[in-house]
Structures are given as C-alpha cells and as structure tokens.
Image 1: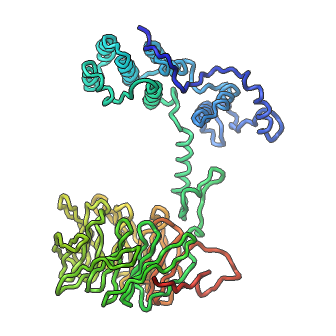
Image 2: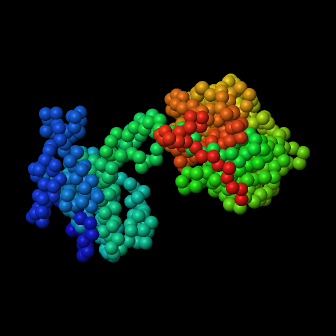
Image 3: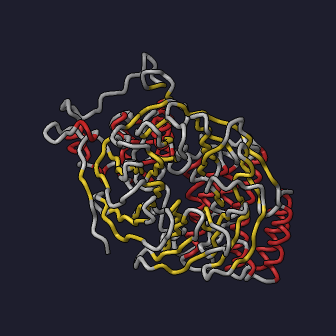
Length: 582
C-alpha cells in the first residue's frame, strides 16, 4: 500500500540537511561584513582545549548548541541563514533519516514514514507505538476524507488495532466508519487546503513525542533564554521593574533606586487626619478617606501627576475606609459606626446609602462579581446586600468591632475576618470548612495578597506577620522596625509581583521590607505625623502612596538626582497639589 495521494503539496517544507549553496553566491560578502577582524570565518568560541564543548565552563556541547541555533533560525523564517549554518558547521539540524521522515509525513507517504520511523533510533517501544498510532490515525482520517472507506477499515483493523494502545480512541475511530462526520469531533480538521495544516499539526505532535535529541523542540532557544532571564530576575534582590527592563546584552541587577523612595507630590486637600487610602484595581485612581468626614477620588494622569477628581461629601462622621468595585466604576465609603455610601466614580454621584437602623456600619467590601457587597455591623454581624440595598443574608460570628478588615477572595470562595482579638477566621463558603490563624498578640489589621494565598497581619507588638493561607495556615515571615503604640497602622503588599511589604508607622516614616527575606530596605522620612496607611499602585511598581495624621497624602516615586531642586526636608523633589474640586 502506498501513501494517500495529495495533488497539492504542503505549503511549508522541512529543510534537508544537504543543501545547494549555489544560490547563496553572495553570502561571502555578508560574512565578510559581519566579521570585525576582516576575515570570512567567524572566530571560534573558546572550548577549553576540547572541540566537542564550548563555553568557559566546558558544559555546553557544541553539536547541541549549533543545532539549537539552526532550529531557531528556521523558526524565525531565516531559512537561508539556517542552511548556511548547517553547511558551514558541518552539523545538520537533523539526521538524513529524520529529514526524510519529516518530508514523508508532510507529503502523506504513510507507509514510507512508518518504515523510516523504525530507523531513526527510537529505543523506547512505547514511544514507537505512540508515534505509529498518530501517523496511522492521520492516514485513517485522510482515507475517509477521500471516500476510501474500505481502505480505512483495513488500516484500522490491520495496522492501528494491533498496536494494542489507546483502545478507547480506537473505538471512537471505528464510529467514524459509520459516520465520517465524527472525524471532526476527534480533531481532524477537514478537507482541501486543511490537509497540509493537519499534517503540520501531526508533525508538531510527533515532535513533542519524540526525544529532543532526534527532533529539537520548537522554540527551544527562546525557552532557554527565558529561563536564564527568569533566574536573573528571581536572584535580583531589589527587582522592581517591568519585564521590558530585562536585556540579553547584560546580566540583570536592580538597585535600590528602583524602589519608590522620593516624594514626588504632596496632596493637601483633606482638612484633618487622613486615615485610609487605596489605589483602584487598574491603578488609574487613588481614593482617600479622612477624619474630616470626606473622601476624595484622585485621578492619576499619564505623566504620573495626581489631580483631584471628586470630593465626596455626605457622611456625618469621619470616613473610616473605602473599597473599590472590581471594575473600578463604583466606590464604597464607610463612616465610623455610621452608614456605607456607594458612589459613581465617573460622575461623583452618590448612588445608594446602606444602613442598619439603630446600629452602625464599620466596614465594607465587594464580592468578585461586583453585584453584591458586604458590611460589618457594630453588633458583630456581617450583612450582605445587592446594589439596590436589599439585604440578602447575614452572618453572625464572634467579630470584634474595633477593626474594619473583612475580605473575600477573588474567586468568591473564601471569607476572611477576625473572630477574636488574636485570631482570624478563613471560611470556605462552599464547604463551610473553617481555618484559624492564631497569634499570641492582638491583631490590629490585615490585608490579602493579590493571588489570595498570603495574609499580612499587623500586631499590637510592633510586628507584621505574613501567613500562607493556600492550604493549612502557616507563618512564613516576620517584619520588624516600624513603630506602633496607640493607633491602627496599616500595611500592604506591593512592587513588582508584590515582592515588597510597606507599612505606615507612628514615627512619621514609611517602612519597606523585602518580602522574601524580611529585611528592612527603606525607611522614608517626610511626613510630620503618624503614617496611618499605605497603598502601592498595582499597575505601576514605582508608585507608592502614604496617608498621615499631618493631613496630607504623599506620593513616592523613583529617586532622581537633581541637586538644584533638592529639598532636604521633603526627602527629595515634590509638587504640592491642592486640586480642583468638580
């Protein structure tokens, strides 16, 4: 039996290792230009006295190195360059048997490809059978496509079934004899020009199956380089830059200058202590709340400057906290033992007021769908509402009223709240399974990491603990150095991939620790009163905000050396902003 005929050859061919270089007669001029020494041959890489290895460590096999580069050239579409490298190095990308096998698959020469498959050096019988199954399955589909039903049936009985593998798949293939349309549901693309694409996909599947020494995986060089860059990034102690900063030209190493450590702007629109700040999920806005009974929405301009967008008035008591909806279109503000207001971020209009007659609300937050919210109540219950204000449910626990920290994970699956002064409850809403994070000291506040796997817990003894909550709660790291004696101080995760921890402090400074090691790396001076809260921009690792009893919000950015404008009392260059109320 021969292969299934195909009048239209595949659009993409695999290069054989033996090539005709007559068409590359101009190559010498190109090579002469590339060589800075003026010769036409590149200077060989150092090999420590051995011709089969390259590199200073003597661990890179020359044949593998050249083959991977050749593969990368072909993958990038540089076919002439790949062919030149094969010819000049004398190292073919594939053996002659493998090149023949690839072309046989692309041309649909199934019988020939089966013969060659047994000659390319496969030692694992299971891989040989699996590869044979893929080839014969493609042959089976194409026979059916060409209405050669009896030949397809013979192939199924005499070639595919005797392999003795994938019996469920064989059973499904047999159903295609009765109903050929089932081929599509099994992954066969279809007729006409799709045949060549289908064969290319088959070759990709075979490449994944066969040992890499026989067929080099696609994008292998890219994968190795990405691994190297990731290792450098992970080893970079102060890494706080976007991906574009990584370069192949030099080894990567960030300095402390990549941390926001200089005041770039001071926001002074509040008239009393600023208690809480939070960046929006997309980092376009910053919301602040104050003892002056107001909240403010600040807009982050393209140049990084913060401008006042809306002043939110209506609370009769100090505004304890704010919470952004998942889509950043609404903002909740919670008065101290008062009501929760929902605001339209675009217009600044108050959309709804949530309240409990005879009781006060002390916390608020959103469910992931943005259609429901929750409020903590002074009677130690948590109430759930829809946007229209209808109470949907309530949960009664041993919740103390002095904290406003209640969170729901992004998948909506876990509810996290204080259950007593020294313990935090992690409740699985589906299974009702409860886990406890128990501390020896009173817990004053906590915050959740972006991936929902870690909890940052502030304690009354001037320590911050990071707990892993992915499985059983486990204390991971302790952070020390900030001051906390009387007031509620908040901390946060931040920086690139949340690699740092920031916190306010009663000594008027902002503290930054390395998340992994717990080392204190910065103490930022500038405020003249207790720093109550900090927030790191989730989309810009170079921007940090801090709120203080000195009535101001400081925006921290990268340090710039500018002696003419430097002001020692402000920890750098800054702009005052009084904003414009809309």
